[in-house]
Image (cartoon, rainbow, N blue to C red; front, side):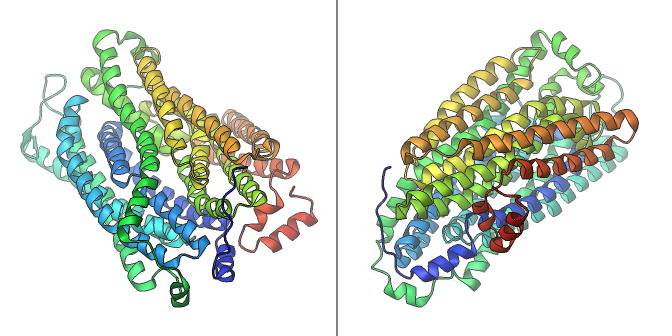
Length: 604
């Protein structure tokens, strides 16, 4: 194995206590809980928002977000992960003054990159909407642009505390961000539509703009709403900007009041720190490869936005027959009367499927965040047994969550989509996409923790190389398939699946080669997969049987099928002994829980 240097770190007892307080799994659980809360709040935001502004408005919303994501990734350029990695390394070595220096060095970097990112999005939005032929998305893009600055500033504190294995600031700040988005975003979207409807009823205009009928007759309220949706989407997405400000404000106050937990004695016994300039150079050198990888991920969304809408518009202009037949009765009549709106409508369906798909990898992202300092510490100490244990725990726990979630999402794609977004025709298009995206979610979920471990063992360059190859494959697949009338928007789902399947497999292979450690594949993959297949089969079978016996109760049957599948999954995990004792020991009060489970022979 490529050995890391051994160190005799200062104040080891103190650090071991903290390590026990927030082990990999403990930290992951804190972040997972916050992510679940954030996602629930997100559903409370996205679902009513879809009802308010429909798939058409969500098209504008999604376009703005996909333009924002790569710019934000470029602005942060992997610095939060680099900060976490450097802080963890220096903590393990006892270089506490360097930890403080890392924080000082990061502030001016983020101020500059955040400010530049804001300006690029604000002024670049006008160019981009013309490229994708969707000028009405401009308002949402402008409303979202300040979020880049606030999110960059939040990243300083999140990366810092994550490296110290204190996940609470990140977790709480994310909840504040979600609450701000929910409160202001929904309120703004609703008020904008209400104001527009009152104006239309009184004067026949919307915000001073004359309304014309799609069919050439007298303008209707539906024609007026089509004009309101771009403004309502902008109001909704301004909630994201407000939420990012709340997050930064909380973290700033937390750091001022609570500090970082380093004791004065630790600072005094620490060696002389590197200069701010040298620390900044190391930070940049570490961050750039990580940042390129993050940009590559977000460019995938930009590719979807650009290719999908332009390729589908080409289908609409040249040979729409096969696509219309595929979605017969699902595309609203108003959109059929104005074919130029169909690309945005289908992109809105894809955005809704993407929202559900992202639930899975966004939760496993917590495993990656928590794994980075844990794996970094193990690699820094150069202990093969600890490295193998960390690798297996991260992969197995990620698989235990992501595989059943992804397979279950695919199995119940239609009932889940209708439960969340209602029973409109276009929702069935979302469900078709979700069948593919559910499988893709499994590989995307594994990717983040695997990349974190590659970064932890010093190969910050590999995730970006792997992702760039995967992204190239995604570009080709999405471009080719989305231009085929019989496939159209489904091509983006296939492209996503192929991209992340390649990336996950390549990351596992590289990690094994670098560490010279091969995880137990039966334990980390096969057992979770077998249990997940039973889970998905139970979900599909129970729902299918239920709708035959109790037609008209589909929403309740969907929830019942999910609950039944969870019970089957837990039983399968016990039968296959898919959870190890080491996994349980990483939990809060893990020793007591492990004794109970061992007594009943429920863990491996």
